[in-house]
Each structure stands twice: as C-alpha cells, then as structure tokens.
Image (cartoon, rainbow, N blue to C red; front, side, top):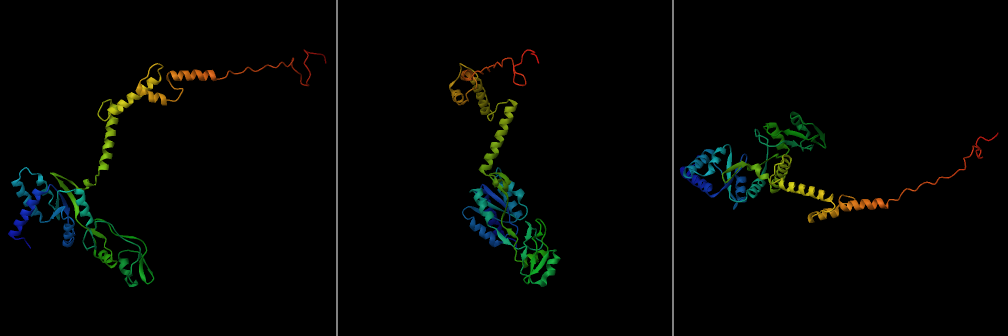
Length: 318
C-alpha cells in the first residue's frame, strides 16, 4: 500500500534529521528479516543507534533534496548504494559496539523453496524418526539409509545443499521433516559510512593489535631497504648507529692503550684471550706456564746384544 502524502512528508523530515544529526551509519541488507526481528533489533539498539528502512527511490530522493540544501555535505555517496533490500543504521557511538548488537540478533529459519542457501547444509547421520515406509523419499535424494530399531537411519553425513544454490521442494520437505532449521537471518552489514568515507564492513575486523603488527612489519622492511641502499631514513638510523657503535667497540678491543667509558662494559664482559693489552698479557702468561718438554735419557746398551743375549764382539770367532 503506497504511503500517503502526510506519511511521505514525515518520512522525508525524519530521514533529513537523521542525516544531519549523525556522522556515521551502517548500510545493511535485510533479506529474510521479519518485522518482529527488526523490532527486537530496534529495542536492542535503543540509545545507541537508529534504524531507518524505506524504498530505495524515496531514500535517494531524500538524499538528493538534502544535498540541494547542503551542497558541501559528503552524504551524497550513500545514494550510490541504495540498491536491493537495504536500510541504514545511524549512530554517533562506537561502530564496533553497534556491530556486535547487529550481528548477535539473528534467528534460525527453515529452508524455503527457491531461496538461496547462504551456507552449506549438512544432514547428520543417525536416526531420523521416520518409519520404514518413507524409504523411497530418501532414495529420491540419493541418501544412503538403513532400517534400525523400526526407523530409518542415515548412514553417513550428507551435504544436501551447497552454499549459493537454490533450495528445491524435496530438499525443503526433508529438512522440515527432520526439523532442521539450517539458516540464520539477521541484519547483514554491507558497508560503513564514517564522516564522508564509505568502506567495506570487513575493515572493522582490523584491531589495534593487527595495526601494530602490520606497522612493525612495514617499519622493518623500510629499515632493511635503507640499510642495503645506504640511504638513511628515520627507520634505519637507529640500526646504523648501533652498527657503528659495535664496530668502534670491536676496534677498541684490539687496542692496548685506548678505551672509552661506553665500551668498558663490553671490554669487561669480553672473554680473556681476546684483543687488547689484556689479551697479550694473557697470551704471555699462558706461554710462560706451559712446561718445557723433557729430553729423553739415552741408555747405553754397551755395544748392543746379539740374538742370544750375548754381547756382540766386533766379528768374533765362531
């Protein structure tokens, strides 16, 4: 039933007031959302946000009129996404909190004939509660069954419907017979408007921890490139200073009569036998402590012995 002129005027004034009062809003899809569920969502958001639904042509008309009165306002970007079954959720509060309320208010729903499945529908194995006379119904859907304890039992888990496919009459009838409500419906976040910027709702998944991690990765990459190219940047200067300090300390450890206060801690922690005067002294001490090899004594065997234990005579008589 079309709205009367008075109701249209009220709608126009309300939407203009929302556009001027709020700087942020969600653009949501409301497919398969009933009026009762929408009313419960309004109650949950009371004091945080306001939901506005309407025909796309009316919403685009209101935005156009609002821009004619406020030429520099960036709200005109919303008119480009008034397509399909959409609505607006206006807020000046925290987008994350409002998003949590919207995503928590979902309801299970049965599979209707001709509807697109948002997710895969899996029928679990096990007893169905159906009598053996309905075996042909399962055979039509190519579902393996057996008779156990006077009822039909599904042998294996069955993927009945794939995501994105339309539900046919047989599939809907089986799910209803098994009392399975495979789908959940609610306000689906489509886009986010924030002070003139329009972006995908997935951006809200980026937390402070994710931003810190990504920033650290980028900073490390910039520092590495700067060090390789020899081009100093704010990211690479601390590394360059640290590398130069290590080089100076290494040189100092090899000198006998020079040091500086900042290097003392490194010189003290260095293992003995390293560079520097201490290292040379340690080497001399080690050399002095090393015992000299003893000379082996030569034993005079008295001219040698023959093979029978007698002394060899220089070619004696036989």
